[in-house]
Length: 401
Image 1 (cartoon, helix red, strand yellow):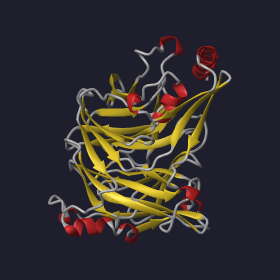
Image 2: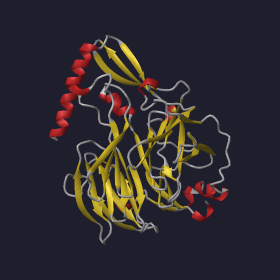
Image 3: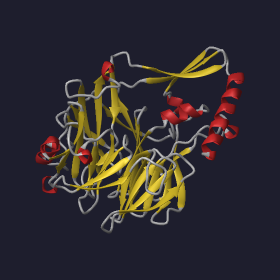
Image 4: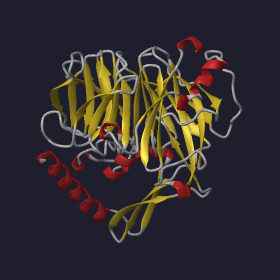
């Protein structure tokens, strides 16, 4: 709590200085090309969403692509009435371990419910609170060596021992920064935390921070940071424009980062954080963040696209275990639908294949439904229908790839 109070005080001081230094009645629209990170002389791979001519990737069979379309033909977990262990609020993440136990993170209840592949309830981890093993800001999960379940809990990583029965809380790792997403590769834990600079350190030359941080496992010792945030002196702009999701590709030892509010995907080496490639996704319809300064008072507003459509880029997901290929999707919805749960009638889903070694991408088509999560050769969708949430898991047959 002391750390958060210090951050709040610093930001208030920063805006006091900002109000005195900015010209009155100015507006800046983000994202801007000059503020995109690590441009340099790197060549962008370009994927155009408007170019929807289906390619024929020889690394995937037609039967495998068809199996991606059968996501709603698998196991369903979730009921509207009855067993409280099968009623969900807001599902934030789903993962599986090598024993095929299914972990479903409900951010509304701040707990993780565990099921087997027959849909039978096994146990519940966490629960809202500040005690050992309890959760407050759980957002994402990762499994390490089938021994530990790591849960991103804001300023903490909560660790559960999943190697033994029953699953037990093991320890909590405190962090200095608020973490938005995590992924695990071999003996490394990667955290996404786009924390702004201290206001006293902000300058035009130094207006960004490293946003991805590597820790060794199982010791949780810090190793190195990499991946530059959006370049801006306003810390709230940095925070919002650097939101996104991590993905770890084991086959290529690559860490991928997908921005939520920018049409950019970056690929980094898991060994040292070196930027390997960059993708630009053209043809997207994204809202702009407007930074206003009226009479010395800064404010932020969102400007919706003129075409009444808004796109969301999903996080990349490993297509199947030990593959260098990743799947990502662009979900296009009408602006009036924003803030409401989408249905198939109000949105279109465009699926793309991405090679994690060099960022090369190609279009797979619009017949694959929205895939929320992929883990251990299973694809997952989450539906909200008739007032309740359900999870659908479908096993992919690796023989079809």
